[in-house]
Image (cartoon, rainbow, N blue to C red; front, side, top):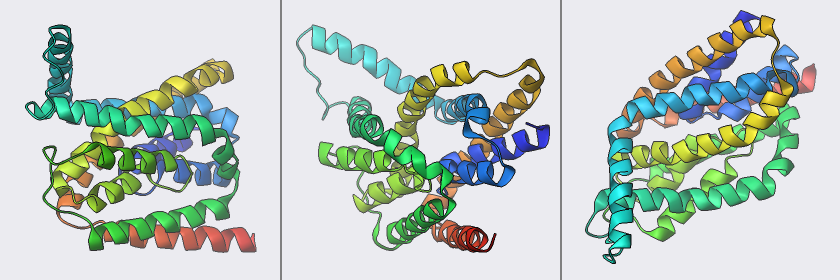
Length: 277
């Protein structure tokens, strides 16, 4: 793998992980375009997930710190018989809702991950999923959004968002885009919705990193490829930071439709290219 390829892949991973355009779909398309075998870039993919995970931690470190502190207090309350007291402690309720949302995501990933893996080598299928993501963004922008925050968020909402996030293991379905669609459809406040979406991405990305790490280590990386790997991870981290900042503004300013236009164009280009090559 060349340094240029590593930069491109890192840039795509960082941007597409958080912008609603599907990182898995774009990476799969690039693999086909560059003629790179999935096994040859498995270690890089795992490490780029690490780069984007660090980006989330940096942007939301205050929220994460509050959640960790509340976790300690929750354990204390449970041990002293005070119970969860979710309605009294919003941060605690947010932590519980994050866990609840990630449960169906994990179940879907375990049960159907191998089934959808075969789509990574099918550009037209990915293009169709990109179109589905574009439609979800239009629906979210047209019908979604409200004034509900953590006070009004319930278990049903969290489970629904988690199921949608699980479906996003399909390449071409954007995780951030689909979960934003689900969150806004639940009439969540836009600012809170985007924060919730990014916070539930932490255990999701971390889980993916843990599951893929053994295979990535087994696939290995030669000494000559460490340079491109480091560059790819650094680029994914920096572009991830940028993408998160952009999304925080885009969602609140109701600009999601512009990403749908982009996805329609990419999908059309992929379909045309696949049919004429």
